[in-house]
Image: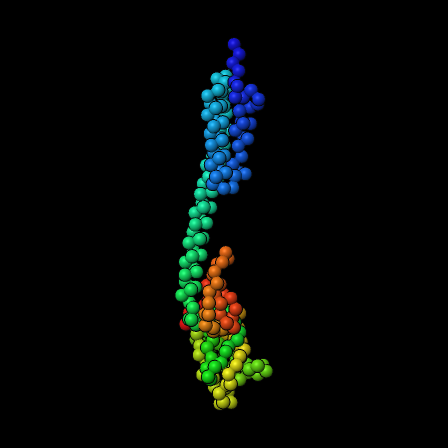
Length: 227
């Protein structure tokens, strides 16, 4: 007696199942359609399989595992996109709250007004000695701010505008440079920070951009300290 399996007459049952390719599905709708297609084919095959030549369990299990994996990855991607959107919204809210606040960010300039200037230093490690040279527009060092036993992190500083010759520095832009050392060994992780006041915040697909005159557009990660 010969039993004909109509579901497999055109080829092996695995070929029909393999025609469903979950790897090519990239969206929730596509993956759902692939799942429906696969289950329809599987049920049809199970109903019409040849008892003497049943479906290969390993093939079916592999296909099911593949669909479950792709579905799980897609759900994970959806969750990550949701978290990304929530983070962007939170970051934008935090950025807006910075308007009219002073911030310190990486920079080598300082604006002096009314005989005062604000700047900062960031150290990646402890330093026995830290010197910050302040130069005028012509590149001449007009004052050196020295500190000792400085812990790692951000150090906000205020310059009183007094130059080495005893005079008060005129208003304008000055350039900063820092050297730090421990046990006589120079440290490479010392940076100067510039001060600015947040004027506005721009939002877009790439996230919030904090507009600081003199410093440009910053991200939340660029801001080292809020004053």
